[in-house]
Length: 169
Image (cartoon, rainbow, N blue to C red; front, side, top):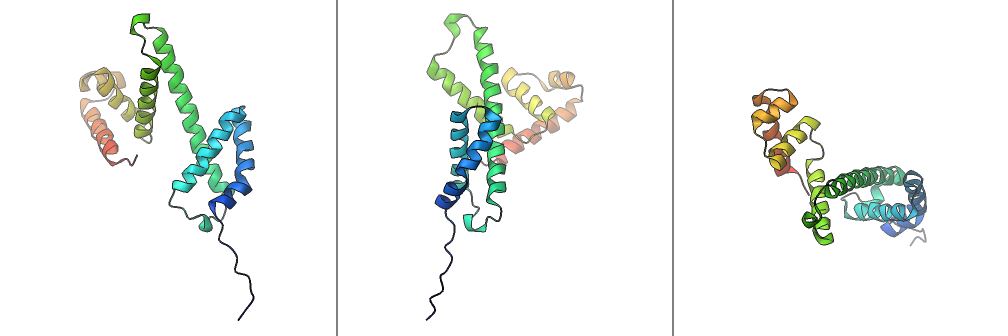
């Protein structure tokens, strides 16, 4: 019988222990805020936990964490931009029409989910879909705004609907 030690498979705990500080520092430099960096670092490891990627198969764990972290950072900035635009729009409303803090939260969450749902669509397709769904514009009006044919708008809308049906949220 051999006394050879079998190397232990790396675990999420090992990955977290070995790389959390580095990732948090990297995120902190980009955000300029340690609290947001800590949150995004935790979210990164949650995404790794939820992914199908076995930790033992990770050849370059920092590169993998960096990829996930960059995506979350991009989502963070997109969300911040959405929140800013939403709050600016709220400031234009008469006080009696301003939603409650709870309603604001639900609306912001919905906007974020919509943004994630439409992620990956070309800009013109996104715009056509949003103008149709949120502003109620006709295909002709959208075609005029985008300076394309109505037939192109029909293709854009079909592409957007198909994307929404196939996306895995």
